[in-house]
Picture 1: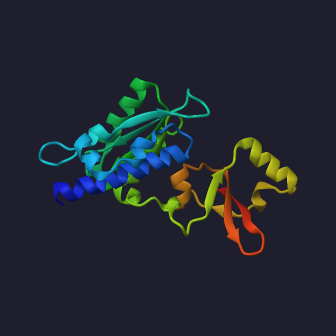
Picture 2 (picture 1 turned 90 degrees about the vertical axis):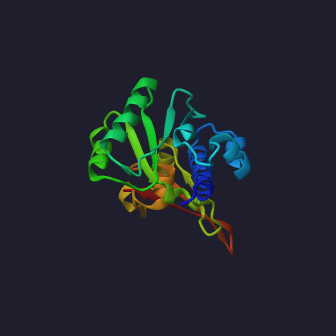
Amino acid sequence: MSDVDESARLWKVNRTIHELVKDRGFQVSDEEINMDLGTFRQTYANSSGSVDRNQLNFFTNSQANPMEQIFVFFSEEKSVGVKTMRKMLSILEEKSIQRGIIVFPGNMTPSARKVIVAMAAQYRLEEFSESDLLVNIVHHTLVPSHEVLSTEEKKILLDKYRLKETQLPRIQLADPVARYYGLRRGQVVKITRPSETSGRYASYRICF
């Protein structure tokens, strides 16, 4: 892939990951999301046109709870191994951040995935390949609106309809939309679709 093609690819990936973080309730400037390709290249590409992925790393705070932070780490390594995961974890430890997302060009080794599981008690780590982020799936016109319910909103829903968690339809943890919003087991998402009769129709799914 030429540097020109790669910079265009990373421009799309960078925009989607900023939209993802914003849609999860974290602070993101509109300038980052609306940045055009020319500005992106001027900001992040060197004289030969290649982008240093380290410059794309960023962390931000939750709008609801400024003490909660998330760090987005772009891996230079095409096939992410344990070494890259250790590098990311050292940054999280240094900045006292518990949540991290790693974005990588190719794939992730089984050993690196084991690190995510092994550190789950201390760090909430998520992974996306650049291919996952070329298009924002939830901004597609065919994808209905999704809203993650708070613990209190979930309780109100279950009480109102006298439901048990097991009675709710399910959304899988590995579902692309569930991954986009960072859903955890037990969280409920409200899905709003257009309806020919009532204008809008809401349904609920629980992540399992």
